[in-house]
Length: 232
Image (cartoon, rainbow, N blue to C red):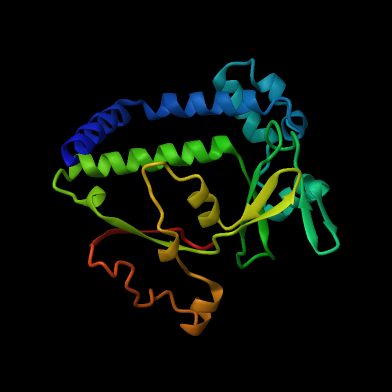
């Protein structure tokens, strides 16, 4: 099994390293501009014109016409229009605002600069994040043929694992909840062995980022990796 995994990882890593990063960035830029032409954000910033002119000119005009925004700016200019409260129920719906179609997921994150933020999270965004994770893992395995990463359990340090209904089929929750429900089929989750790194746990530790002592594998099987997301 490890031989097959390492062979696949080596082939994927070779394809990844052979790619031209400058060409890739141009292709991504073109694709994102084209996808966004029919959105409100795209219309506000002239994406329709940018999509049909040479890259150098399009990139220069993009930098001139699209300002750097904070999350508060995005909320005020684009996201707030889709937000409302129906009693205790939060409703959030964005259709063709900053991405084509309806946003199906919102990643909740509470940073130091604002209350809870709702980050639009699309299927395409998740697919790209997954591809990046696979590329990173492939490069690691290709360079470490003796690694036993894939030969045991992974300890996933998660936040809240529930997703909330925010109306019209959309859901909202912690990044770890979104990730668990969109994980690769080869990753099998033991629901009885999920440990959440909640605010309550951090509070009892005095705000320190120490991992509490837990025994995730009472059967004695080794944990070969710890997976987590940085809190923002």
